[in-house]
Length: 238
Image 1: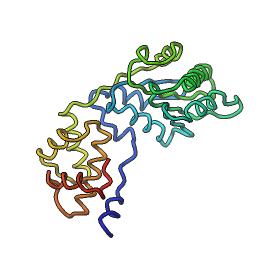
Image 2: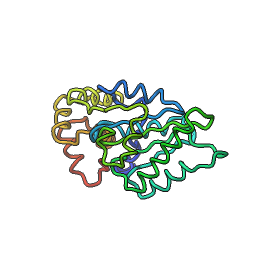
Image 3: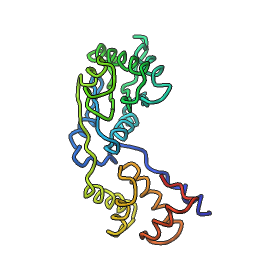
Image 4: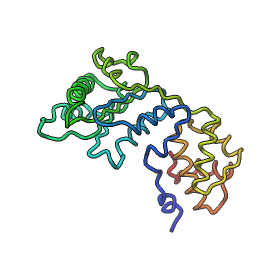
């Protein structure tokens, strides 16, 4: 097997609630685990705080039958949300609808999400109840959205997500590396946090790429190896 094929053997893991690194966001993670049909939750915080990870994890849970994940910035967000909001009563709704990046929604998308919130509230106590998980980059009333939608973002649970500190990221990366059988020296961890992206999604993807690269090169993980990987045009790094 050539090196390029070997680099593609181990894809980055999918987002789950178990591999979310909560740091100071333990209460938000606990609420996500307990989210049930008829409840809604809104996560907000800066880039890299893990809000998209939580939505993807919720939508991918084995018991989230027919869950739907909608990217708020996508051109098909409005028709998807409108179709869900206008689902005939005799047809089942997904048990969970997750809507990410609502701060990037255009006017049709906002109108469709407004309608979906109304549908969620009307059905909350009925047999067709569904859970609603939404995420954006700021608090509900600070969102650049129509007023009636801003109000609905705060209708149920709201959690501010805080990014991990450097110390927490260092500890998390060391733990993730240990799970993969990698021993990262302090200078490797320091180099990653000093020279690379600081959000945990990209850091975790970098660690997976480094694991594959080290395996292909049959060399231990060092700063020179890390630099070589990032400089290699054939390496699929994040």
